[in-house]
Amino acid sequence: MNYPATTDHQFAAPAAPAPSFVGQGTAVEQSRAVAEVQAAVIVARQFPRNEAIAVQKMRTAFRQQTLAARSFFRFNRGDGNVNGETIQFARELARCWGNIHHGLNELRRDDTAGESEMQAWAWDLESNERASTTFVVPHVRFTKTSGRKPLEDPRDVYENNTNNGARRLREMIFSVLPDWYREQAKEVANYTLENGQGDRPRSQRIADAIATFERIGVTVEQLEENRAGRKSDKWTNLDLAQLQIIFQSIERGEVTLEEEFPEQRVTVAEITRQHAEQPPASTPQPEPGPAAGDDNSSWPEARKPGTGATS
Image (spheres, rainbow, N blue to C red):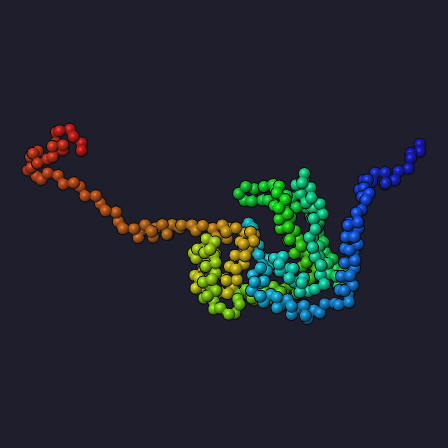
């Protein structure tokens, strides 16, 4: 018995319908985007980067205290801390290295399913090395108190997509940069954090750090407990650098104040010491009664024995 021949096209999914009409503005924008990419590639080939100048630009940038303070993050996960470089650190490296394009695109948004399809990418125009990743971001926010919270406000959805995409974009930028270049930048930024601007003594920087945290409700005792119990006058430059990273992470919402500075617990020794420091309670003195040999006439009328009065 002869069966009709079949092909894969019979079972293939139907192709997405092509737009029947492309507006003039869309056509102009498509042509402009293609021409812009071609021009960027040509310029990158004609004017290749000078690695020595790129290293010098990087060192100059990360010697600035404001940039070094925004270069690292820290947050709690489980029983430990997660540390790393921020998206600001990655973008500044890409700028100093030169001839690198990067971006974050929202490919699709499905409000019914409550998710967005995103793409983060980075492209070295000179070496033609490109890295990209596509991922789905749910329109929800997870909190420790209320758990899963759906997002409906377009602004909340945008901020949620941006925050999730920034981490992917950072990794894409790092993947097209040399590892040695990134490590040198980390060393310079850490050195800047540990040694400060160089124009203020360490005692003044300690006082400024304490005043900064007091404005958000953190006491000196909590800061000292966070620094492994070291007193504030014993803090090193590394301690001040770590406190600055913690403050920036709190400002960006990467970690909460309660996670970094939990409420201080009262120990048994402190309770015992407080109890010992309290003055002894005074023993109540008995009211004077009638002297020996006195008759009932010396008692008050309401308190004479045998009258039945109780007060």
